[in-house]
Image (cartoon, rainbow, N blue to C red; front, top):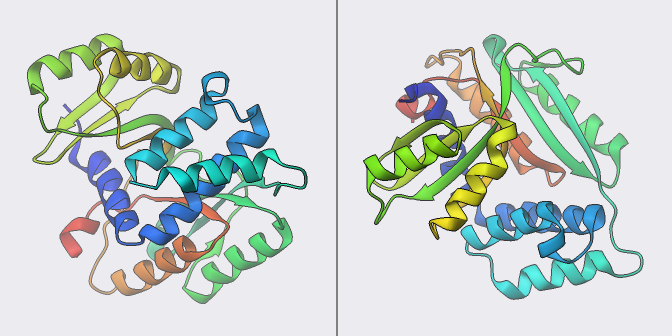
Length: 243
C-alpha cells in the first residue's frame, strides 16, 4: 500500500533514536513536561500528556522517570519551554525540518544556524519547506500477533492512509484529522503503539551519494544531539541503502 521511501524515512528515524536511548529519554521527559504545562497533570483529561506517557512506555522508560517529570512540571517554578520549528537545507539541497522545545530561544536558534553553517547548509525562513513535507499522523506498532489482512482492513476503516507490515513493525500513516480515530480503534483492539504522534512526512526526495553522505550524517548527528531539539525530519530517500 505504501511507497517504500515514505516508510523507510520513518523507520530509519526510529532506528537512529534507539541507538541514543539516553537522548530519547531526555526528549520524552521534556515532552511530558510540556504536556503537563499545556493541559495539566491528569492524562485522562490531557490528550497530549497521555500520548507522551504512551510514547515513554513504548521506549521502555521507567515509570518512576515519568512520575518525576509530571511532578516536576506540576510544581511551582517548573521549567517552561517554548516550542519552535526551524527549516533549512543541508548539502545538495537536502531538506531538514526541526522541532524544538527550549527555555532559551536565542541560544537555540544560534546553535541551529551554526550547525547548518559548519556543515555546508543554510537555515531558511519559516515555511520554506512547506512544499516538501506534509504533516501526518504516524503510528509504529509491534507486528507480533497481528493478522496482516484483518488488521490492515481495521485501520483503513478507521481512516488510515497507508499501512505497512515488516518482520518486526507495523507502520501506519493517516491524515491529522484521523489521528484520534486510529488511536481509538487501536485501544478497542487492545493494541498499544510503540510510538505515535504527528510527524513531517516528505513528499519529494533527495538521493544521497557517497560524496554527500558524510556531510549529511554529520549535520543530522549534531542537530539530533542538541538538547533543545525534539525531532528532526529530512527528505533523504536512500539512507538505509547507504548504511
